[in-house]
Image (tube, each protein chain N blue to C red):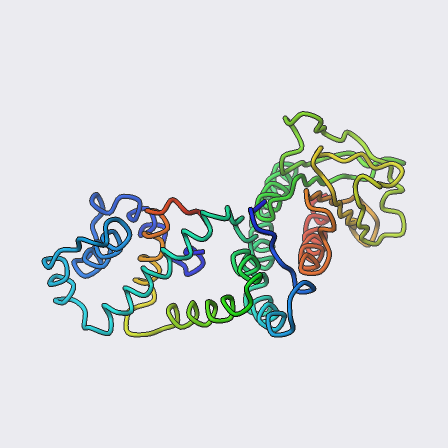
Length: 80
Length: 237
């Protein structure tokens, strides 16, 4: 169990509920990290927007971005 | 969170120890940038920046810095809060269960593998497949962690009337229902899904979670997953 309670759709305001619904539709789940950040709705909203922007196709091949993300997660000893 | 973007197994393996893996010069420079920004970002050499500049334009370097910075942010956040890994996507998991069941020469082994795959994919406290034998349900495959923890037990048999009516049941623990003994001591919610074979009730797939009120709301997908898995598992039961 994580240290901070994960919120579910019934716990959050309508805007975040929509954001959750979008994740459910897109990937069949709501990442636990975002359910945790949902305690701070404005941070979650901007975090998700930034996450999508940074990882969407851009100037760098997506595969290389993936590799950088995996490498950083390895160095930080983060399995999430 | 990083793995969801489909990095190949070979590249993943190489990222454990990039110095011992053969990466093209542009990728190697990018990986060194990730290392430098993550470990000692106050002293990144001009040599590395010049090498990056040979392979990438300014927009690309900025974009890579954003990826590296973002994952440092997310990693540290998740390490701080011990965020649990998000469970496997149900569609992907159903596909893996089908793969596990593909070994038709050894149906019993295939069922055990499939239940293990399902249990791991959703991190159930326990998951077991039972076959109806007269008035009882006999365990044929068990996954999760029902064994080896104090107070946990392997259910040899349950009452067959647990699946009477043929619909999915959610059981709250410690309230429970007559005839049901939790497999995992930590179980607080149970989902009992009838398994059919040739339109006849043939068994049950039973999952336990440590959380109260699991298998509700967002976990409705969990219930649907178990019902989908029960249809597939029923073919070999």
